Image 1 (tube, one colour):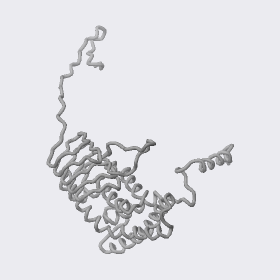
Image 2: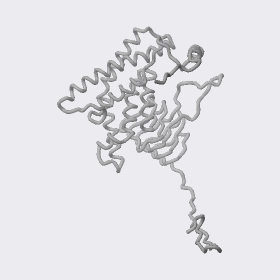
Image 3: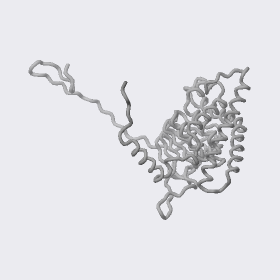
Image 4: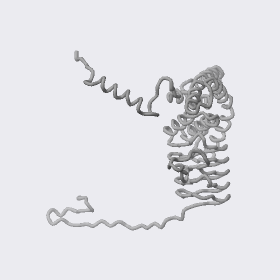
Length: 324
């Protein structure tokens, strides 16, 4: 039997790595500095999606007979685990700012976890409007069930609406873990800090980006590749980016933004009932009831002519680079 020995110099490698743990900051953790668990947060999110969409998400078979018991067990489990993860996040902030005692973090974590459960009915009503907007606005949609099961925007928007509750309560880390997980699944990047109204939908969705301080009204529809972003980042005298402030646009009610459009700047407002055409670039406000589009570029068409030559040797016919 072959003996697998340790690599030569293993102890030296270990010592050097441990030294970097003391020399570097931010990329390593020690026992007293526990952060929220990414894996646990994702599991909590998936269980919340199961509660939001019973029978559509999750592996638990839900029937009318067992629905109450299943939902009760899920809510109890979510509450316990979410409270623990929120507490870790709050304690992380307190270690950085020393603004509160540990027991305050524990009390706040309990309140926030309970609030999440309390607001699930509200989120379901909002999502019902989002889903109906998708179905009404997409001629390819054959049923509500198809929209829920297969449209990536539903996962992205549902995740955003959950994460936004935690963001509002100043819970750090966890909302971003949730939103970036949804981003990895759907290609849609919605920052949990954005404020988004009812009946919202993103058609196709891939490559859509919605920044932290974006405000979106009711009945807004976006297409794939839309960027609602920051125009520039103000810096302090040392050249560091100044955090906070309104950096992203406001999109008012009943606006449609077509594929590839880029809208930038905290002072930029797209007025209600406006339509923004594909691939436009906007850095200043647009009045209500306005249509913005790019003039169609001039296109030219020409017939491709391939030369035909005769070989003096075998008289084969040459077409372009092919011989037949």
